[in-house]
Image (cartoon, rainbow over all chains, first blue to last red; front, side, top):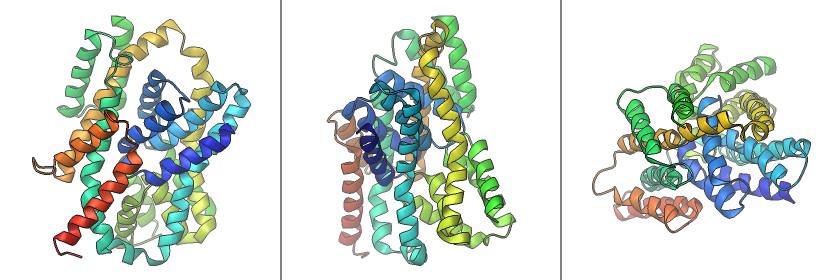
Length: 182
Length: 176
């Protein structure tokens, strides 16, 4: 049952993800934290942090992790959890297969299709909103425990935005800061 | 051929940190450099992979695999692109349950969590710049964000609504 739910949820995530990994975050969170309660809000933030420090797309990373965690949290063994990972990861890729096979034959026509182009006039700005929603949803008491959290946020923002410091370096510094500050 | 496709996408999957766009130069060097396709074809594939829903990296892998070796090729490429992160995250997931209650790990993550939010806020602003959001069009992302964040609307409806809105706008402007 948990496998079927994971499968259907990640098919949906694969199918409605426009605008890259960060736009996908609000959607993934909505499904796995708010709707199904498979993982907690803090654990979700932790996965995002892990995704940002390990190779691979965030969509795959989240599917693999949530597939495992949801199955184990539902009371199954770690081996069953690994199978949950497989189910969610395959499910998130499946819509791409179906669509590529469907449009490969006439992809030049699809690319220059005026209707598709017009739809993107609306999709592109909405993508910015999807990413903003992901950031806003994570601005909660779980992630911001005190004033030090806000200071860390501000420093990380400045390092990334103004000085283009690599996310992995920023997360490593934040881990060190966490040990020193708490 | 399958082996070389597999190894190429395995490498792409293993060495790209920071999302699909970081791996573009690597894919281009492999696909165009090995004469799998011309540069023009590659740009076309990129455009379609971006316009499609789904994970960008997975879309490109499936697309290139399909163009070279049809369905078996697309399965090989997708599998190879996904495998490194799958194995790594599964290993982390298996260990994380044991270490997350560790006091040191807990302190580290207390420092990391607010920083993750900053690392999402920055690409949000970059995307706003790239898309060319102005004071007039800012209402679209703001409304989308508020609907999801405050009203709990599923992003699925936002995506459908935005696509329909864009299409209608194009129609009203007489471009369709």
